[in-house]
Image (cartoon, rainbow, N blue to C red; front, side, top):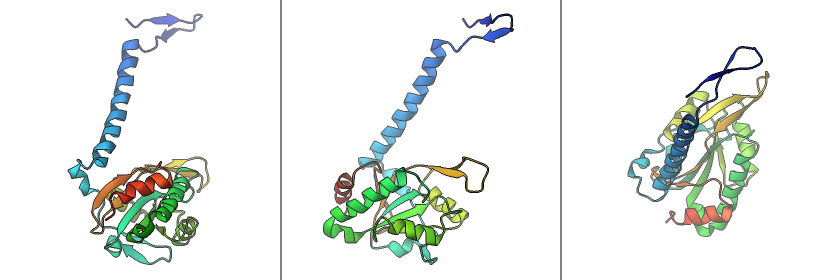
Length: 212
């Protein structure tokens, strides 16, 4: 039973949560982790037929400020990644792996167009995403857009992103975002998720299984 105690006459101090409550909270967290892991495996094994609804129409801007849509990439597989150019570690690590995977795919690389879509349109102008994507090689294309366009495409791909303030200045923020690669087919439909935490060699092997 929960009780209260006094601390040197300073008044009652609530007792800490009971062990039963603590175990309940831990159990809920573990359940969410298992559901998330199970969902990824369900998608990866090819049994998640309903996940084919991932992705959809979009209208964005390329590094030259030209309007592009999802239909401009028809006929090729697209490997879509959402991030931002100020990302300190996850994004550059992932894009380095993508560039390495493309080099390892051999003739199949010509069938794939990697796309980097920013979740930080305020700072990531067309010129910025062009320079950033080019740093990882000529095969990755950077895309940006208005905040509304980015919100729309993120919704299509069920991407989480959120501005995280780090100071009072207008640019004092980072972006929290989900990190996964989406392999889309030549018809624009979702094919498979590709883990973003793999090496280039592992990523190339995963892609080769899906690209015909």
